[in-house]
Image 1: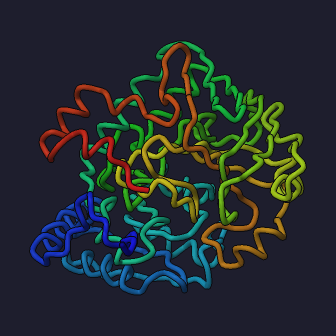
Image 2: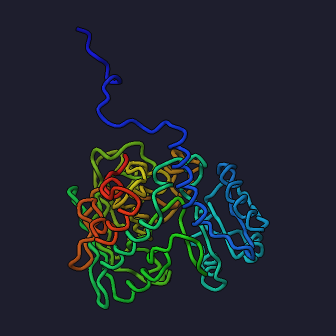
Image 3: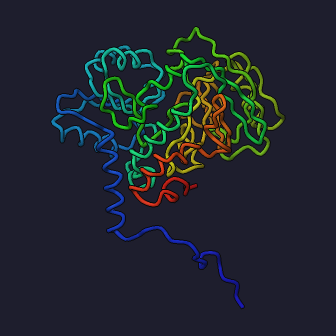
Length: 387
């Protein structure tokens, strides 16, 4: 008897192929798209794009703006790695009420921060919308209302009115503690992102599309982006993977933090040698969590997985790194940043568990389950994570 080949075994449902079904799914994604890019007829719209961004993405977003009577201004840079908006472009950006950006500087440049805080500019960052065909994916059509509720329920788990330890652990040996003050908590969770506001419809907002990259369980907004503040961050992170490496680590290195800086990277593997040269002297500036149950779990390029409960430890480096330049010469981020990845972390805030071995506990919140039930089977929507 001839042994059957693997491709003849069909024991699970196959991907939808009917045009009718695919059309309906596409318009589910389109609803998220239109709601996120919440243009108003009186907006002045500036688009900070780059040479490698899918031109269809530019035309789709600009087309939506034109449908509201807005004339877009599009600036196309050679790449998206800028760490600040060039001086000569700032007067033009200042005229905007609505900014869409693929540029790295969007979240960290003091100028961009000031434009949101003082002028009330509404920003959408499109790190994960560089190809229009992404509108055909599960993550694009997953209801943004559910994502927002998952985020709000996670925010509610942070202890209120007290100092606490934010602790990270996993089976590889990670043991990291960030000392949070009550004020740091309020600063972090006061953003539109942590309030689960998924649309760019309120003054000063900063939104990610596709939904969503972060928000972060820690970042420098917790200390009002004050570079002089040293956050009590100590311990060791043993990452499962990192952006810029083809596969997960077979012998994960130990990344040691002391007083808000990386002081050593232990290990004898090739990856440990590379990361030792790269990371020592670097600072943890963001610790992002995924909140979209339908984001592909093991896609970590370009800036970490957006899958529910996945973490990325975003580190700003002491100097530009040649390994990044060689492996990712046209990376969407500059060669002074690195994201370490974990899919199986346990995270506690005080006595409350936020994530249990990669499972975001907010998925069990009654309000999340109830909302998911309005859109379909909550088990499928919340716990059936694509690879």
